[in-house]
Image (cartoon, rainbow, N blue to C red; front, side):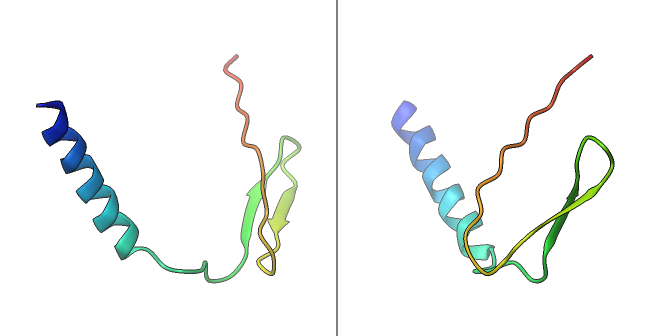
Length: 55
């Protein structure tokens, strides 16, 4: 049973990844904690952390 579920998950991941785009179109802009826009460059790979707090 576990092997069947694992195989189904792998096939689903393969189909979803095949439907995606190779690169993003345009730039990605997010808001920081001060409601200022932050734009990530598309020329080179970028690593960013997304941390949320629940208060």
